[in-house]
Image 1 (spheres, one colour):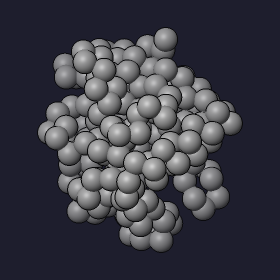
Image 2 (image 1 turned 120 degrees about the vertical axis):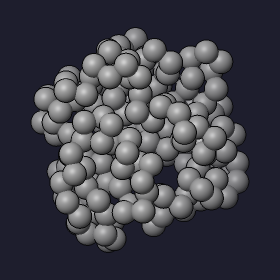
Image 3 (image 1 turned 90 degrees about the vertical axis):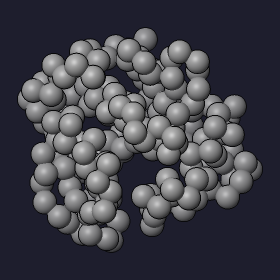
Length: 191
């Protein structure tokens, strides 16, 4: 189950059905869906978003830490900004992927970095040896975010999702080297 994680500006928490409209604003958005295809198509409406949230909540209830799906919420005004996840990658479910999906209005900020940093700390606190980020080759913003958080390029692969992607890897020592950056929280906490 996804543990509640709190950073300087964000709360990463379990999704609820009440988040459906805010989630639809993200997962129904064509700009977001562009980066999720073919794994996930745009969510067409509120009914479909509620069904998807029910599925995520049920999967999350069965997941063992550090696996999970989180709703990203801004602390100052409780606005739902998007979602984040730590999930096993197919095929084989051996590699652990860190992912995030924010409303396009927030892409220029550092919320993705802050959420990713919190999830990486959470994973490494649970004795994970390495995390991966799968980035589409034309997604420069995501590639910059993972590099800013200490992830190293591990090559191009078609191992995941049947398409060519850029693979980035993060190990605990890499995260420690990226921690002193002024625009990231020095420490994420659980509550």
